[in-house]
Length: 249
Ligand SMILES: Nc1ncnc2c1ncn2[C@@H]1O[C@H](COP(=O)(O)OP(=O)(O)OP(=O)(O)O)[C@@H](O)[C@H]1O
Image (cartoon, rainbow, N blue to C red):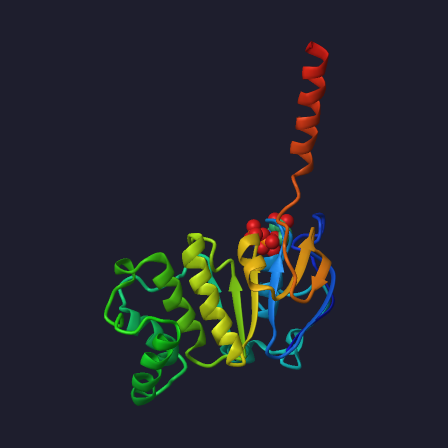
């Protein structure tokens, strides 16, 4: 469903690559956690799938198509096949729950009758029955994220990309969101979720692909994530402190 073939991404010529010779296959129907510290390349990976950024070297394939070869007039079609969810929900603040989800269907020209049928159905899938007429600020964070997920899946994309979708939520609410994403995956949607939340990853036991400094350092089925290594600078400081205290004793 998604293939990265030796993909390198440089944002500018002189800096370290955001992705460095990354090769990876994600099959249709898989659930993959993309984990790694801040700056390891997770968002870049997601942006390349959406064709929001271009690979400097190598090839990205989505649903069999080389995204570099997709002409700009066809990019909307690529993106229609991909739902996306972000950490900050990105809802339209003045529109109701129903209208936020309906909007995603209106922009692709769905009829009012289809929208009237589909929106309640998808709100049920994400556990928001009866909240159709609320405005985003009348919802909890977890509920707002459910609206964002409903909007992302209402057009039945083959792929759902989630970039730190639980980043603003407490642990219990996060697990509720994970159950929703799991259910969507069980219904056949391929899910790629970028996160550095080790508790969430370890609770789900899915495939785990770990990035460090733009390289894949681990790819495990039913994997776990032990979190981020201590930054080298801090470790050095600790050591220095230790030595200093030794000297003064
Ligand atoms: N638009 C950009 N221009 C220049 N450099 C960028 C840009 N976007 C990301 N980078 C750099 O690319 C590297 C990877 O960033 P990326 O956002 O993909 O990491 P990430 O793992 O998603 O991090 P986070 O968890 O903080 O979102 C970082 O060094 C970052 O500074």
